[in-house]
Length: 160
Image (cartoon, helix red, strand yellow):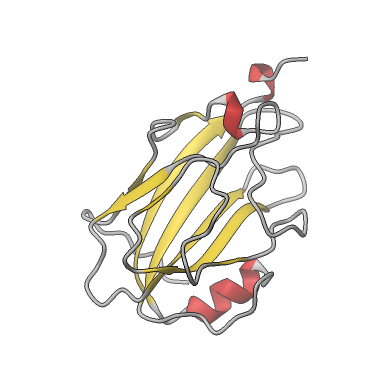
């Protein structure tokens, strides 16, 4: 997959700053709410967005926490604790084999959580519950731009 980043397409959250700790309410130790996200600088010709949140630091390798695709190009934000998806948006299955957000829950140490937003020149002809691998393969030649936000969460921050 192409590693495309521009200076204008960006992803942010009011819940946490880039490379900072994700607040507990967005994790398995809290309410497990999805954080509010907003993006700017949508590329021309964008037809849809794909959002993937994953953890490359999981002991068993990459762990997928949240996957949304076919987010309409008119959408510029997702609300905190998202319950109703924007019209036309579909959920992919995460590593728990669930079609919903699963917050940070590291078993061992500080992990990095990558929120990756892809602007695509098409809608993906895929079913609800599709895997991240299938989505990545389908969007391969359709990525106009990519924005990324990294949050951290650490076992030492967890209450016992």
